[in-house]
Length: 94
Image (cartoon, rainbow, N blue to C red; front, side, top):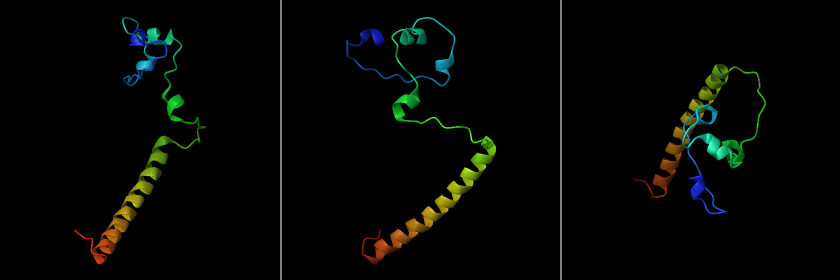
């Protein structure tokens, strides 16, 4: 694909997980892309900032964040019901 670009052309590639760490070579390999000095790190384009490890184990952090999410979803259900009720009072109910 890179060879088909014009001098100032731009291309995007969607790669499978782990494809950036593969050591295989052959037709269409990542070496072809690297040879053109392209940067393929997603964080570079989406603004993901590097963060330091906070030392909290993944399972502990995931449990805490899941509990927070479930609480927020429950609150969301209550707020949605209140909004529906207010719309009905205003004559815009279903």
